[in-house]
Length: 336
Image (cartoon, rainbow, N blue to C red; front, side, top):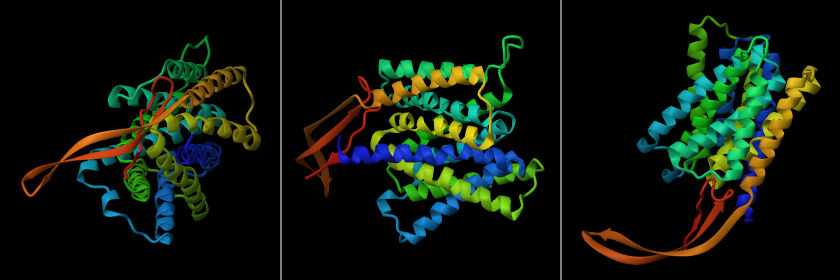
């Protein structure tokens, strides 16, 4: 596997680890601040933190990589979904065990892959279909409150709703992933944070103390800002569904942190969900690593120069990444 792809896989795993700290730490902060207000400060921390990094690195964006009018629908969709998703997640975390929430976040893999399949025509291999089925089954087990009541946990359903929003958001971001990562993350953070703040104030939530606000901003920078930044960099190379498969590591790290620091108990339902989720996640990751081939293409390109059509032959190398028979068909081009 090429160094570029290996680096992208490393970035996807790093994104997962950064995000994993969000759930247990957010559970603690929710004792001192409202869920929508916390969501706002998390995204402000992401946008402001990456903004500072951008300025420290020179603050320059190539013109070709700036967001433009053609990117507006996907940018607006990305921001809107980034307002709704963390609000749902924070409300879910407040009334649900943090370990359960961490595992339920893996439903984002299902949402991302299915939306990529139906909306953007990315192929899904038989192995990945099996992984998605297991992850969905585990999500149902973790959400179920018991045969006597035969109902699903409201908190769990909120987390699943957040995962669905982020699955759609991942695919919106995928369409603009070739543009400046700094600009994307700063837009995500500042505009989504502002939207959440307006909703929080309208709902009557109070601004947090300086200590809690600072803690939330720092958490947002790490768990959202750095996580989103590394996720987008990975997604630009290996695609939305493939990056999400490696992102499957995050829930297990988050669940471990919840048990260590929040002292949450291991229920039979949780252990069953954990085993099923682990099986689905392992299949998803293994399936993404199966196929890769590389070959040369020559294309005839017609260009318009001063009203005259000219023909030239363009030779370049396509590097195709396949997951199974073909989840996420990615190209990188190297022109002579």
